[in-house]
Image (cartoon, rainbow, N blue to C red; front, top):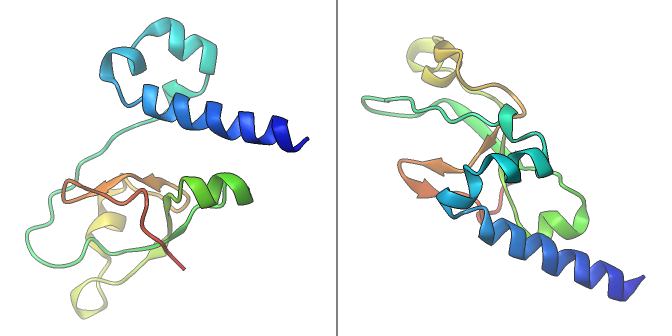
Amino acid sequence: PEFLESRRIELENWLTRLLRLPRVASNPDVETFLGGLHSTREVSIMVPVGSLGVSLQQKKLGSTSAELYPQAEVSGFTSGEGDSVGVAEESGLIHVGDSISKISGESVINNKYS
């Protein structure tokens, strides 16, 4: 079992790196093989000044995966100025449970969240 788990981790790591290549990730055969990629979406929200208005936590992927590939997950929304709805929540584009990969063009994949 230990050998199989180490090979699974290595395969997952390799596949993650491979899918960072746009040509591979956009290949319809890869999408069919992996399934679920059609449900992935990318959104951009312009925030003039201030906070996006989200609370993040480390996504729970199982102990091994979470340790190797810590991902940010939206755990809730924070209020905007004067108790108003925050930018992210108001946009309707971001939802609790969404995975976040970048903020302001900077990767948040390996950051630690509580």
